[in-house]
Structure formats: C-alpha cells, structure tokens
Length: 286
Image (cartoon, rainbow, N blue to C red; front, side, top):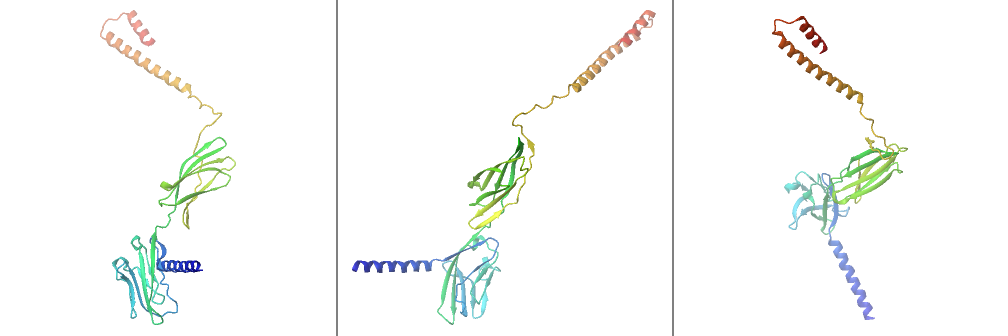
C-alpha cells in the first residue's frame, strides 16, 4: 500500500510543479509592423485600480504608469507618443508597432479590493504578408491550344505559395521553390477553353493574401507538326534590281567611252566625211 501512496503523492507534486511553471511562463501575443496592439492586464473587471505599472527589461524600466490619479506614458523615448493606458482595465495599447517593440512586458496592479497582482506578456512583432506578384514567362500558341508558363513570387520568407486556375479543366504542373519564395506553373489551354485565369495565394499560419488575377493571351506561334515552309522571296524583284544595275553599269561604261572618243577626235580639224559618218554611227551605237 505504501508504493501506490508514494506514486500518488509524486504525481500530485509533479502536477503542481507543472501548473506553477505554466503560470510563470509569459503569455505570447503577436502584432504586425505599423499596426496597433493592446496588451491586456488580465485584472478582475470588478477591481478599482489605484496603481498600474507597465515595465520592460529585467530591471523593470517603467514605460507607462498610473499613480494617484496621474497617468504617464512618455517615460521611454522609444515609446514616446505611441502608448495609451486604460486606467479602468489596466490595458496598454501600443500604436504603430516597430520591430524594437518585440520584447516582454510586465504589468503590476494594485487596488483597494485585493492584493497586488502582476502579469507578463511576450510580444512578437511580425511583417504582415505582402501581396505576391505574377510574371508571365511565356504564352505561346501551339497546335490545338496554348502553352503557358507563369511565375509567382513574394518578398516574404517562410511562406507557402499555391495556385488557383480557372477553368479547373486546364492542365497544369506546379513547381514550388520554398528557398526563394517562388512557384512556377506550367499550363496547357486547349482551343475550346480559349482563356485561363491564374491567381497565386501566399499563406503563413492563418494569414492568407491572394495576388491579382492574370489572364495571359497567346503572343506567338510555334509549329509542332504539319508545318509548311515560309514562301520564298519574290525573285521578280531581285531580277528587276539586277537588270537595272546592269543597265546602269553599261550606260556608265559606254558613256565614258563616248566621252573619251569625243575628246580624242575633237582636237582634229580635218575629219573626212567618211570619218564623220563613222563617228556618228559609233555614238549612235553606244
């Protein structure tokens, strides 16, 4: 009988220690950069508070107090102009959260109805999820449809990206890369579906932010089968150009010869009738 009794006392003591540890562990809350958050004191609503002291660090640096009916919230430069203390509930509101606000906050409360109480809250400050963006890598017309590749990316880390495609009958292959917060999607849209809508959603814990919907259009065409060669260039144009060039060169050459002949024979005073006729015939021939 002694052994079961010892075991019972042992487990009861263990339970008491566990409860004490849980009671001492600070309550964790999360806020987002640039937003407001209220740290609840946890006091009994029926209390009429006479003293409220919110502090940080192990040396209990006061950041907001309520003593003898006087409220002070500009005790630390970091929080100046960003604190609101509710003297009825003891709750502290921090406005426009910054990354430096992530720490443990301790509140000590006193009232005329009960013994002083305290509470510790650990504040985590997060960056709110930003809207992911979609880039069209390619959108190419192929036989019987369109082949599309779209990429989704986000500036946030530690997230999960997923795709939503309409109509659901579109054939897709998803490739996710968690290391650089991106996801690529390969899709084939057949001719009967015409167009497809792509939406990318970023998720982290309970947060969810969708992107803007993108509807790509086929920009170019790739031949897959039964392709015909492009029509050959018009040869008539080349022949005409070649013929014009030959005429131009011929005219230039023979014209030059005519000038030389004129120059050589212009200096002679006596030219026989036969020679004149021969010259005229030569020039006419040119």
